[in-house]
Amino acid sequence: MNIPKSKNPRIVIIGGGFAGIALAKQLRNKKVQVVLLDKHNYHTFQPLLYQVATGGLEAGSIAYPIRKVFQEYHDFYFRLTSVREIDSQNKKVITEIGDLSYDYLVIATGSKTNYFGNKEIERNAMAMKTIPQSLNIRSLILENFEQAVLTKDNTEKNSLINFVLVGGGPTGVELAGALAEMKKEILQKDYPDLDIAKMGIHLIQAGDRILDSMSEKSSQEAEKFLKKLGVTIWKNLRVTNYDGRTITTNSDLTFDTATVIWTAGVQGALVAGLDGNSLIEKIKRIRVNEFNQVKGYDTVFAMGDIAMMESEEYPLGHPMMAQPAMQQGKLLGENLIKLIKKQPMKPFEYHDKGSMATIGRNKAVVDLHKFHFSGVFAWFVWMFVHLFFLIGFRNRAVVFLNWVYNYIRFDREGRLIIRPFKKKIFVTFTSDEV
Image 1 (cartoon, helix red, strand yellow):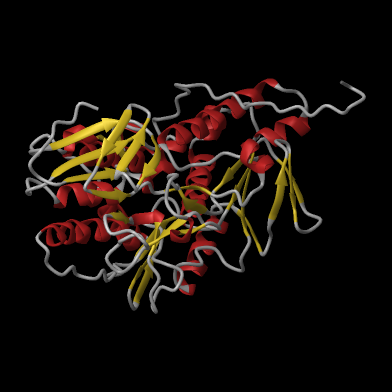
Image 2 (image 1 turned 60 degrees about the vertical axis):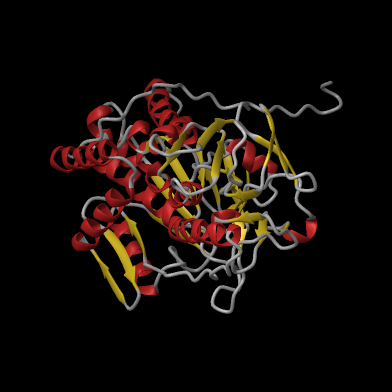
């Protein structure tokens, strides 16, 4: 990997997400060598992926080059690669570009979409965890409308403009709101020869309310906003299969659609090599103690979505969101320096700064401890918070100007099919046909 030897201890970080970036920043110019590994050369601001998927923002607005973040850092190295395995016995990381030894290893690989073992849904539904996936969704949405203009078959036409979102968490709610805004303000202008009123937007939630991680008041307000925008919400309904054409559920209800976007759950993005006793296989997360130290290891740590830190207040671990990841990254940076100096480490304590979700123009819900509010003011709070946490002045400026333009013009300029998306067709043959 061409990483020079250093007189300082080497800390290897796997993952350039919120946790990995926060940790690397905390270790800036300390007496350590930091090596950051990631399969992308950019950091993604995931909370705004849905805006890329719906044409509100371009991908470059929510991505920032990792190397640019750390230009002024001493003894810092970034390598573009995927990690294949961890060899903890020899204290090495095995990657696609070679092996790398470490003194301390930090796993911050984040999470990926959880299809709960259903391979057919995994093949046919769309996920939205990365920028390429968001661009695929954007292309598919626009390609569907282009195809709907051409077809004379009403059944096919309705399927092409019928969108089903599975999962009523923040991602599903925000995506549903953005699609509804497109239907209301944009698509009729772009496709005057289509009856856009027939466009269906369905949000399916397995539980009894959407945004179930937020307060009941926020959940009710969000549902009211979505219904006003024309989104059909299905609660207490579980999707059992999707063959690329039809969704089946645990009831007699089915949906004919060419587009299913799966936001129903996430699981940790595990790296091979750790002892099975340190893993929670069902959700693919790594057990850590209050110092983010992996159970059974002295020099291996995990943080962010991949880490499962059980406590009385959080028996199922902390929420798989940006705030816990950034807080863990910052504290772990301090603790690693303490560990090197043979000083006692400080246990992690999560400070919940609240949660929020936007449901279209002038509509959002915000939970801040004992305060819950919604509407226009909540929408401005949501915008300010997201702008603040974006990395880079240019990204903040571009996103802000896009939002101002879209607000004034009721438009989304990013309706471009830059990279056409073609669904893979899986055909199953019977023995007679073979």
